[in-house]
Length: 271
Image 1: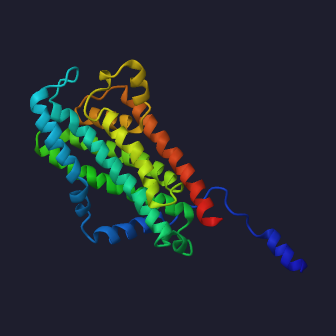
Image 2: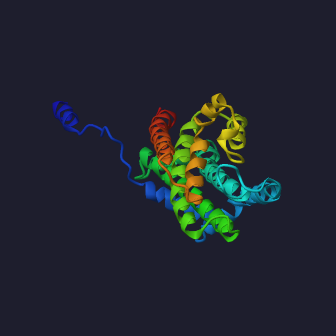
Image 3: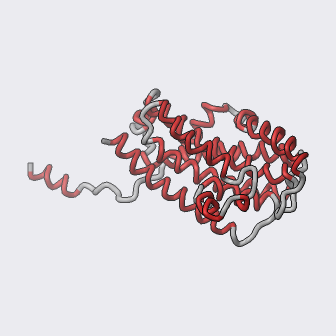
């Protein structure tokens, strides 16, 4: 008994900082399940809706609008980065919300994987990394389309592609944190009650200056507003110091999302 007590007293305490090991295994697994050897198939489905919006609103209505005042570009070129940010957001959120919900409630995948060398923190990191990859592939496909339309130059498209990584990271982390509050499929309707107004009013289709100042302040608090502002500045080559605020906002949102997601998933799966 004394020897057993001594061995227990000498056993190392669990690490305060969780391990990140095994995240890459989860990314490889998701890639194999979803796409096999061709990740571009993801983009074909993800960019279909934003391309339709671009043709119907950006190009169609753009013929009536002309150039956007204060921006100096055509309406289609103004709308395209907003649709790009929305497509990346939707792709990232789909993986860390609906996808994660199915894996937890129906497939019991997360509980099973905890018996492998993949840690809980590895699961969180792997799912966010996978969602970032999904968002980036979507962005690459959409950027290819709008570049071929002549709405974005090739050099600016490369800069915008780098910005989509940050956008995907921010929404993927936030989505994984929110998913722990989802109890049934009907709860996703509440998510849509947030996403749809944000899509319509976060300067996707018009500048924030069309609002009164009080409304502008509310719009500027929305994460999609900062995602659109970042990608629009990159795509149009209008990079300025104001984009630093958007970068800081998205980095903070992503970091907080990771912390909250790690704590919430620990409660859900380990208790």
